Length: 213
Ligand SMILES: N[C@@H](CCC(=O)N[C@@H](CS)C(=O)NCC(=O)O)C(=O)O
Image 1: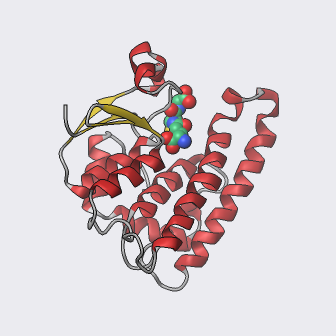
Image 2: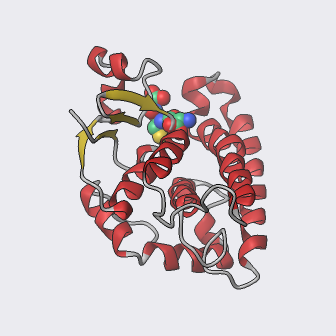
């Protein structure tokens, strides 16, 4: 079947991809993979995503994983969306740098915090989480530095993929000592971005509530 089918779990790494599809106003289907019920380990899902991780995006019948890669792929398929700086334009290199920074630095630290006891030794989880919080805090410092010049979004005054990723990950920090909402500059950014109708739509579709408020 042509088109997009997103395998998602509410609030998981699928969230930013889901948001992007909503922003693009393209037709897509969703299939719930309930992580709380370990559905990501079901044989049928592992055939699509052998690592047993969410999300998977089926594009024209072919399944792909990795949320950031999915967003880059979708951006490539919808040139002119305004959600990314187009190739060879002024902000493209900065956008690539920020995208990979989020994928390489922030996302692994989030995983370490959230899965410290499950992926690793439960006895060492506190130390892993403490290091993860340091790494996450230093990314929040960087984001605050960017936003302090009065820009609306991380890349300037154009909302885009990095904002959807950043907001998803800031939401994940809600139970951490380094919760993004505790920082005034980030809080103002979060409130601004989360006021978008697409974010409200996303929350309704994923039955999420309670963040940022
Ligand atoms: N780097 C992956 C991370 C995916 C990931 O860790 N997803 C989590 C949910 S946020 C998951 O599938 N957890 C279930 C598990 O690991 O068993 C991506 O961005 O897609």
